[in-house]
Image 1 (tube, rainbow over the protein chains, first blue to last red):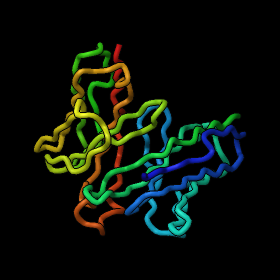
Image 2 (cartoon, each protein chain N blue to C red; image 1 turned 120 degrees about the horizontal axis):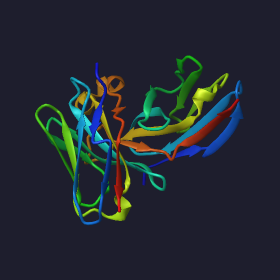
Image 3 (tube, rainbow over the protein chains, first blue to last red; image 1 turned 180 degrees about the vertical axis):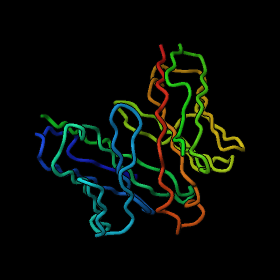
Image 4 (tube, rainbow over the protein chains, first blue to last red; image 1 turned 90 degrees about the vertical axis):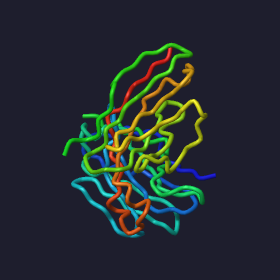
Length: 115
Length: 121
């Protein structure tokens, strides 16, 4: 059975700290891994990763994928209180009878940044 | 471009009733996926529609159904509501073309709407 596991489930850090979030997966027919940030409502897209070893960056956030070891990390440097959210990892995979486009989500990591 | 819109934003129903939720994708997107989010189960995939056809399906009972119209707008229906159906229902839109053309994968990001909060009493 396909699975996506995120760790830690939650963490509390002080403003200015760096956080590293982990996402490991076991799926058949992997195609992409996505990171989303969810505050109060809808998840907002952060990154899509398809190739190993290529870091994606957006401001203080960065992410990388290791397709050999089947995991990804999301780093947030110089954290701010506005980074407080649930960070979701999702993997796009496909069963034989499916088409692409089906995302399987991890449980998420709750990040709390204190002033 | 306008984002994904969902209506209604909040809904309260009683057990046994049925409900219809609506999702309008980003202009030009042809794929709409539906997800259920609960504190216990997280985000779970319901189904995906592309060009008015259901292309992918999750592991939900037949009480959950959907459809897509020619303008790509999609509706989701839940019949005979149960207490456990209380959740945030999210739809996500994408071009859907990566389902056909592997080379388009990086352009096929799913963007989420604000969700419909359904409470079943």
